[in-house]
Length: 113
Length: 116
Image (tube, rainbow over all chains, first blue to last red):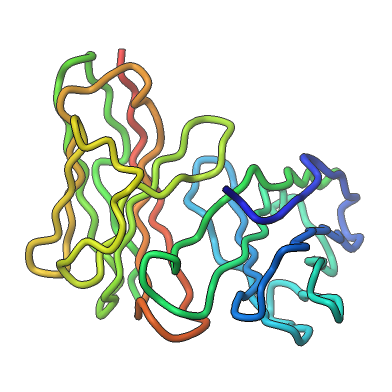
């Protein structure tokens, strides 16, 4: 079972920031927060991940609360091509069978012109 | 760097027939995953390999699904006999290590299966 809760859908205007929330209240100390997205008819695409510090890369920023129970993915200037299902996933540090990604239903982000 | 390659991209078969999907992971990636994604749902892990050994196949319907990774590189997922409910996208993914931290998993484009 997925250990995260996300809204089923969100809308955003093109050019504006998209802020996608995720709750992971049962996250443990050895688990990362990962974000993937899946554009229609494509495989999931890695966006960003973090443990407890905020992270930024060329695609997005990840803000993790101090208690690590929730996070927000920020797309600073959303474009129509950012329309996709966004998955927030917690994943342990150690390997073995628990090292897989367990997907929930994600959030369908629709960027409107 | 080449990504995860999968084939065929699309396949339509009749129920009770068999089908095989092939995956070539990113070069050097020791861990390989097969996921099943039914329309409207998130991907579900079927099997995970570490080199040529199985780490997790708890969600693989072993009466009809089989997978192998004989030389620790390419992998094949087979369904025999197929059922209507097997209609889904079959995603292959790979990562560089099964242990350690922060090892990103990369996905292929998927193989779309329709069973009629």
